[in-house]
Length: 227
Image (cartoon, rainbow, N blue to C red; front, side):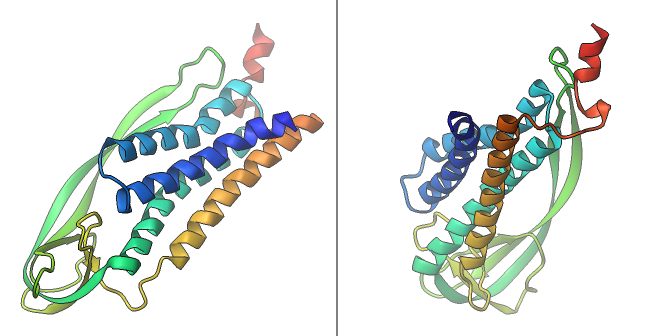
């Protein structure tokens, strides 16, 4: 039982941190606490990926668990944001005054863990371009004066329904029919649940002494035999 708890609690902690960060951003005091929770949550979620190569067993299982938890981090934040907008958000019909496409170069850092206990792994970077659309809006009363989207949603001179947060915590977005957070919470729950189940499966396999048969290049056992 202790072994199962040791394997499962990091997955549960990663999920709790993901939702905690989301609720802090949407409801709680703004500041550095949410950023710290996001950083800790990412490393807790990604830990199974790195640990898999040091344990040299069940690499694919640990990779799947880590990816599921990282996916849950993103989904949880969006789910809480949608919930907050559904509770306090307002919809205004705004006139689009200007649409400005903006290209942004994003640099991604990739890490390939080593295949042996003494191998530090390889790190490299790649760049990609993302297009954003900045809108200048004329909204009635206290509505937003700008909005940014990943796709083109309206042309200058047209009117668009904008869902916005009176507290300014959540970015404005185009209002869609029946904007609810149920689907996002469901997806986040499925991703988090998959991470917990994979952690539980990993613990059960350890307890029974069962090891998946993986290609030799995915484990460090071949390095151990050479010593």
